[in-house]
Every structure is written in structure tokens, then in C-alpha cells.
Amino acid sequence: MTDVADTPKPSSQESPWKIFLVFLHLGLTSFGGPIAHLGFFRTEFVDRRRWVDEAHYADVVALSQFLPGPASSKVGIIIGVLRGGIPGALAAWLGFTMPSALALIAFGYGVSALGNLSGAGWLHGLKIVAVAVVAQAVWGMARNLCPDKERLAIAAAATVVVLAVPSSLGQIAAIVLGGVVGWRLLAGETIALIPLPIRISRMWSVAAIILFFGLLVGLPIAASSTGSHLLAVFDAFYRSGSLVFGGGHVVLPLLQAATVQPGWVSNDAFLAGYGAAQAVPGPLFTFAAYLGTVMGPAPNGWLGGLLCLAGIFLPSFFLAIGPLPFWNWFRQHPVMRSVLKGVNAAVVGLLLAALYNPVWTSAIHAPADFAIAVLAMLLLVAWKTPPWLVVVLGAVAAAAVGLIN
View 1 (cartoon, rainbow, N blue to C red):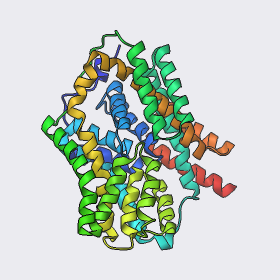
View 2 (view 1 turned 30 degrees about the vertical axis):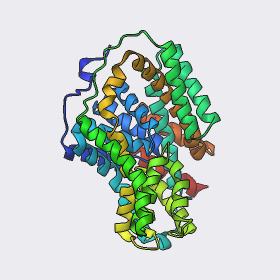
View 3 (view 1 turned 90 degrees about the vertical axis):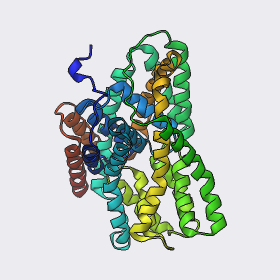
View 4 (view 1 turned 180 degrees about the vertical axis):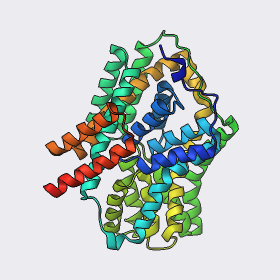
């Protein structure tokens, strides 16, 4: 039985400033891509602060996986809404996004002198630490969300589907499969659920959905009819943020087509920024800030970076806020509750598949890499070392191994 002291307090509300500071800490220390970010978020908001419980967190992750855009940023925005309404959502996004956005804008100004960082030893260390972070998240979520053989089977099947179809289509298929199997096999169990503390009205929700589709249709028409390059740039990044499922690295082909093909950014500059984007914490979508900074035609510089950053993240706000007021009904409907149990188990399978590819395959290339990953896991699980310190130690260890070799 869960101890009362360990139960989140859904009625409590945090100030936007506190939410900003918590997410700023995550924005400065969350390396490893969107899946690793979800591990950092779980450690911070489920285990440490108890802002949400395990089931609520899994529901939020599942909702974010259904919607296009950066998964970890949408999860952060939703947690911001749960703790502080729309001001909390803005504070969460700003805190989590600002460090990497500022770093990439600065890198954009000095890209020709600094070159590509993709081969740095310390960067490889950050990827190795991501293995430990994701493994910890998979283990913790599996214990809570896959307590029986049916849900373990759903998680295993989801892992197979995602590895067999390594695209956003495979992720969506795994979630749908989990929901269908949950509906058929997990029905009949009565669970008392604490409603998510939604702090926005349905009016805001409907407005967000209307604005999302209105801009998606209206921006290209406005850009074409006016010939405005500013509108064309904003439209290109808004569409990239609206139409990509899975987030993270999946958005890179869209951004390359949007910026390199029309000649706004050179391919060399694009690849240099890609290496730098992997070296900074926070969401990979902040790569847009770099592209806006180095873009040939104006707007560019820091103004261009902020414009592109706003364009690519704006859909995430609309899609995170839009469904929320309907989410409690969805979760507590008897049939939907069974579906969600299956979906939550499938999310564990998605995380397990991601632990192998791309997290493991991009990080573990030698026995020394495996040794660093094991030590990072021990620091996180056995010694309860703060994740940011594990990140630093992992980067230092990998850099030292690179110097020795």
C-alpha cells in the first residue's frame, strides 16, 4: 500500500517562479535526448518532488506520445499546467528551453570558429549517461505499470513493434495495440483515480485547438499571398513542429528540407549545428534557435533565433493545452481506463525499445563505455547521486578514456 506521505497532493499549486527554477535546473542538466529527458522528469516529479504519481505521469507521457511535437517538452508543459495553470506552462517551457536555446544562439554566432562538436569525447560521455538514465526509468515504470503477465506481454509486444518499425508509425501502432489489448484483457478492475488537477477551462482548450489548425492552414496562405520572408520562415518552423511525431532527431529531416533546400542555411552550417545541439542539455528542438541565428536572409541573428524557436514550439503549447480539460473524463471512463492501462504498458515497451535504439546503439561501442554506463547506473540507483552530477562524472570519465586511447 502506498504511504500517505508518498502520495502527491493534486490540489497544491506552485508559483510560476518556483516552476521556472525547477525546470531551469532540468534545462541545465538534462542531457541525452527526449527519452532520457523523460527519465530525468520522472526522477524529479514522481520520485523526488511527488508533483505527480506514477500513473498520472505515465498518462501524461502517453498523451504526449499521441500528439506531434517534442515529447519531453509537451510533458514539461503539461506538468507546468498541472502545477500552475497557463503561467506555469510558460514558466516550465521557458526554464527547460532557455539554457540550450541561448547556448545554440551563441554557437550560431561563432560557428565558423568553433566547428563541429560531434566527435568530442565528453559528448560521448553524455550519451553513455543517457543509457543509465533511461534504464532507471524503464525499471521504475515497469515495476509500477506492468505488475501482471498481461501488461508485461503488452510491453514486450510494443518493444518488438517499435524495433521492427523504427519510425513514428511504429510508435503509434504500438500505443494503439496496447490500448486495444488493454480494452480486451484488462477490463473489469475498479480503481479509484485522483483526477489530474487541470487548471485551465474548456474555453482555453477549444481556443488552443482552433488556433493550432488555423495557423497550420493560414500561415502558408498568408506567406504565399504577401511574399513575406518572415512569414515563410515562421511557417516552415511551425509546420515542422506540427507534423513530426516522436520529436527529437525525427525533426531533423524536416528542418533540413525547410532550411537547406531553399538556401537559407548551408549544409555544412546545418551539420555543425546538429553536432552542437547534441552537446547541450534540454530539447533538441532548440536546434531551431541555431538555424534562425545563422540563416542567410534576414531575419537572422538572435532575433531570427527567437522567431524560429517560437515557431517550432508554438504547436506544442496548443497540442498540450487543447486535450487537457477532457483528459479526466477520458481517464475515468470504465472502458477508457482499461485502454489506458494497456497504453501505459505499451509506453514501457516504447522506453525499452528506445533504451536499445538509439540510446544504447549510439553510446555503447566498447567495454569502457559499458563500464561507465554500469557505474552511472550504480550512482543513480544505489547511491542516489543527483543526475546532474552523474552527467558531469560521465562526461569527464569518457573524455579521460578518449585521452588514454
